[in-house]
Amino acid sequence: MRGSHPVTQQETATRFAPPAQSPSVVPAEARVAPPPQLSILMPVWNERAFLESCIGSIRAPEGMSIEVVLVDDGSTDATGDIAARWAAAAPFPVHIIHAPHRGKAAALNLAYARASGACFILLAGDDLLVPERLADRVAAVVGPGPRLAQCGYRTFWHHRPDRAGVEYDPRRSGDHVAGGAASFNRAFAEIYFPIPEELPNEDTWLRAAAIATGTSITPVDGLGLLYRIHPRNSVGPLRSFAETDLNLQQRHRAFELAERRFRARLDARGAARLAALCRAERLRQGRGLARLLLMPGLTWQDRTSFAANASPLLYALKRRAAPLLKRLLRL
Image (cartoon, rainbow, N blue to C red):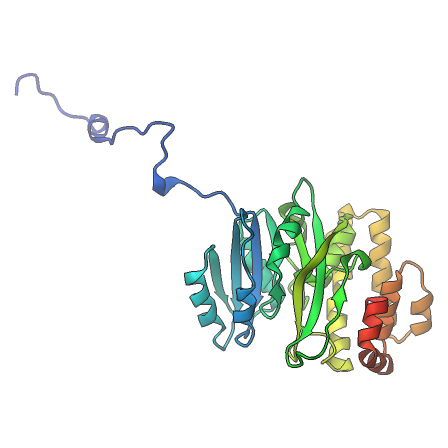
């Protein structure tokens, strides 16, 4: 052909390239949804008996985007099947991670690594949310810097529906934090995670991290969580003293671990508070009741809680008088 010339690779690419998109038009498949306002992190392990009622309590407040990240921590029952059916029908994203059984702390660490929300709530598979309180729990932690809040919660007896539970007021809890009643923003999450996997629970590490970093706990008025009492609770009125004693030894290691992790940022107040709690745990284990009750640096809640779990006799008395004592002293 007259005037023909070899076609270069660059020309070929130019000739057959698709028409350029207008800068203001983004293909639907390329659009990325904004991150959810709330991520609910759920570690579950053999929760077949409770999971359906738990997930039935999760409802997004109007106008709030949420996601759930559920980690099946090596369940051997129907937990995974229940979670899969729920995820397929849920009106919000539910991400399921199946992992070998490594414990609650490891499961929460996996959940956080997958989560994309701006705020976080931790939910055990045997508890129940109060969805009407979710918006308040999130609003309490929106803003710059690390923010941590705690709502009210109430216990209920799974096998004794006739037995009254105990309601906990966040304004009377001091720096004690119940994991399922807590909410926090991503700035605090970056401090809190990863949870040391040698710890058996998330609660005490929440408390220790808040103390170590000087993060105040904002109370959220109203009931936001129902805590189920049943034989598989790691601590509680259905556990023996020996079981509770061992669990508390493991839980209270959080204070020592926080001293190590946050050493560079500890101020004098945080350092003194963690040191007092470490010493109180040593006295509790050593049955040093008199010194425990008289030592400085502890709140009234600290003294009653440590003392009531310091010996089989005191533990038995606490269990017998638990409803009254918990209302008066918030053990």
